[in-house]
Amino acid sequence: MRISIENLGKVYDNGKKALADVNLEIENGMFGLLGPNGAGKSTLMRILVTLMNPSTGRVNVNGFDIQKQRGEIRKLLGYLPQDFRFFTRLRTWEFLDYAAGLSGIRSAKERSAKVDEWLEKVGLFDVRERSANKLSGGMKRRLGIAQALIGDPKIVIVDEPTTGLDPEERIRFRNILSELSQRDVIIILSTHIVGDISSVCQCLALLNNGQVGFYGTPEELVQKAQGHVWQLSTSGFEYELLKEKYAVISTIPSDEGWEVQLVGEELNGYNAIPIEPNLEHAYVYFMEYLAQKKLELR
Image 1 (tube, rainbow, N blue to C red):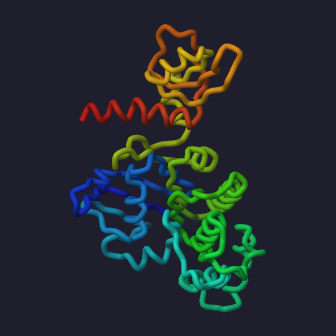
Image 2: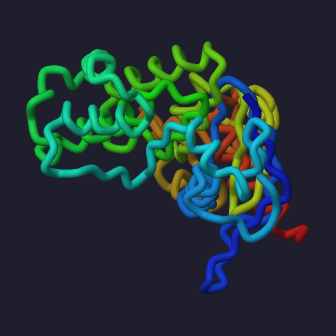
Image 3: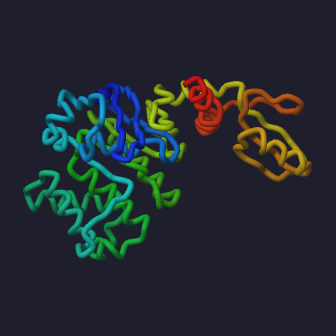
């Protein structure tokens, strides 16, 4: 499977530019789309699942043109939108059975087996008879995940999938996606939560202001922050000054005041030691420094 995105742009009727000159190649496995709210992630997702037309550019999905062969592309897709909704009068199992039918599973016996399988996988089997609209927020999200995956799609697109999930549920979801990514499947995970990307994605793109600021592996993004992540102990007064000048990642109370981790181009006048960056450090460094430099160059 392969998705090729060339010079993609989207301008809304009110003149707002949501995407500009997006170029990406997405192949089998888990692909992360990372960026802040408003970066254009949801717009890109809606174009990829054929719910929205681009203003410029081309998208080719496994040989199908997204402008001309929408029906063929939709047969390949499983989609969990950020604002997932469902028919409130249906019970949990009935909604999932309906989703299975829409995905092309015609046999009632096969649908029943699939419904039970996915209710078990997402931890909803015990509430299968409950009205879908009576589920908790996290349970509704899990039901959305199940409906996206029940038809064994070749391309899975999930937009902010762990919103409303507790840590245990997020781990369960990531494990499901990791298992699926071992097959001949493309999984696109769009999120602003760095932890959702770091443990499961082999490749990622970072969107900022509708443009691709970075495209590569998580390790390559982390490398960009090498030498720009610092740790120091500081007093309360000095900490307030630091917050005004640098992006503070974490603070831990200590005998001296605070143990602080922050990112910056360089730290002058402070007794700070460089530490090894992780993906969260790299993301903050990119957004605070590298992305701003690119905007200034334009």
